[in-house]
Length: 212
Length: 202
Image (cartoon, rainbow over all chains, first blue to last red; front, top):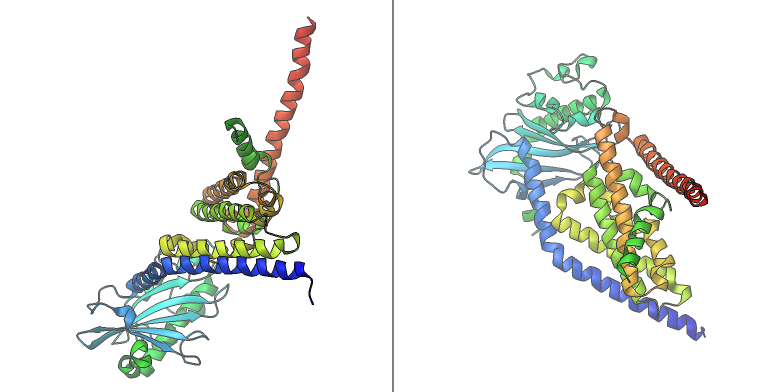
């Protein structure tokens, strides 16, 4: 038989744990809806940079298609594709992929490709590159990623989808060729995937519909 | 508590026993997030609110908490409060939450908060403990904001300031500055006394 003091201490601890859990549960109920709305809004907003100049129906973020690993897209985890339609006809596909070979870990990228295989926009979603050097890949810091806009296989040829230092056609960020190389490679691989799977990408059912 | 005592407590938290500058507590978040003023401000406010609430709760429950279980109780209280704070930030300050990232949940491990619970809140009434939380939290938050502003400004001329080594240099400069000011004050006080006694001698 345990000492009474142990039981008493345990009981106090249990009561406090219950009170604390109730406090967290209450806050969660209070904030849950707002948090979900914020995340949806943030997703919509972060998809915008790859949609410029396109006509499309609203609700892009609902057309999500998750591609489980392993797949041929850049990145080892699962990748996400958002399909953009205008009156049921496919307009573009937005790929959320990661370039694994950045200078400091993976670089999360949003790559927009229209039905003809032309890049509509590239946007860095998250990275841990060096401040002042590799972080110029962010749209807010330099126009470097804009050089992909309007490019496709053929402009330049696939062999030239490299940075200039490696004999390709794309500028590198000064002092951050590792970052530049990783991003160019990820965009190239995304285009290759799109070329091989375009029909499947647009005809697959949305994630939500598939699970219901 | 008198107004005089209140002012004295503020001086203690902001200067004499500043959690970051003097007690050297909670340095991990302090060094990691002070790359910009806004980040310092955000984490400062988050830490301040957790500290005030945890001091209040620890103090309110101090009569029922046996000595043997006090550490798990502090951990429970602080962890729940941090989770609540994180949810509130996610709901109302989503941009700040995104830029602070992991450092909001990591407030749990800020030893400045456990230290105040153990040293102060567990031995003092609720009102005094809340004041202590405000005072110490403000001291920490002001330091975070000052370092953030300093590093953000200096980084325009000298990039190293915004990188991790810059955090160590800036904190070292802040501590050195505080010590220098304290010493000058002490010397002035020591220098003032003999002069006054000379006047009296005449």
